[in-house]
Image 1 (cartoon, helix red, strand yellow):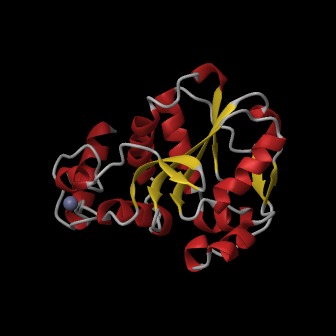
Image 2: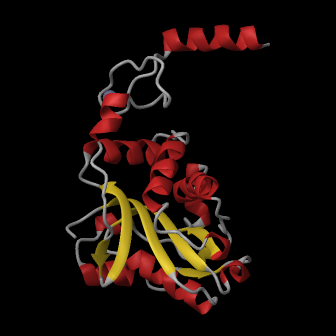
Length: 224
Ligand SMILES: [Zn+2]
């Protein structure tokens, strides 16, 4: 079976050669088969949390970074689920010095509305959270909050006040809300724009008895 699998993989390699999602060059023997080492090294990672509306936010990189932007785009819109492995590992690396009380900390990915998740087939924030959770040895409580109302993407709304109004009341407690009681919660998402979505999630988590909320995203968009 192993031989058949290898031959099949070699045939697929010829028909669909693995090309880097960023520079489109052929990738030969890289660990990640969707990005080349050169592009991976080009990502300028953030070293310190940024303060958004008075709150610390940890991010892997800035959304203006062309490589990180392309990786997120392919994960969200080109069904390249495996990109979550790389992004999840990068976020875990970013957080490993921040998350110290591992036994009292859990991860909550920002949920998509069920209809949107069905359309896409997965929630990219949850995939990233699962990988980061494994790496940081933290449990992931995906069902602790729900997106009860669909909303327009925050990136399409220019005004800050309108961004806040767009996400007001869109989340509610989920069947697993008890998981956050008395815990520090690392809230994870792919992109943070104004921080309004994150703030809504924090409200629900605090009502559910969460202690400290740590905000963590792959990329920071907008001028912060
Ligand atoms: Zn490349």
